Length: 193
Image 1 (cartoon, rainbow, N blue to C red):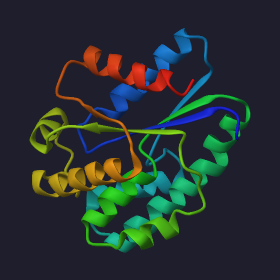
Image 2: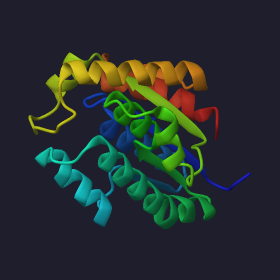
Image 3: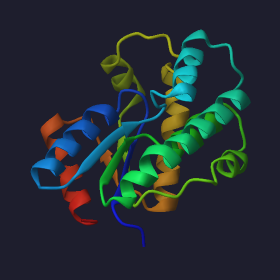
């Protein structure tokens, strides 16, 4: 068993993963834990390339999947794994389930996406933040990301929910207030501390 705890919040665009990762981290710090909050794509070299490519819409699903896998491995090796080794709680806004959901929704085989991501360990806890695609899109500024349309996000959401059932991930609906969602998240996280 490794030291530290690795918690991931997953969900479609507008589900609140960024907001709730930050708030969960603040709560854990108040509880006396040392916390690292991070996100994917990262702000590192590969992650920056991914963000640029999402705006230009010029890369194929295969290239996207490979870039995300490379960014994730770099993220794991250079931030997550070392942080866990020093007994920190790492909270990531997205991780492997995002690739499985988004890249599979573009038509790629899930087994292949899993294979290219096999070099990272699974989180201690993955929580799916669930929201209707229309509500999620209404929460986001219009960025023009190639993944931001209600039909596509509906497919992604279906994959997330199927994976949650298969892997027994907790699902938290984020249609309610931020405070209510945080209360539910804190209750779930307490179980692994």
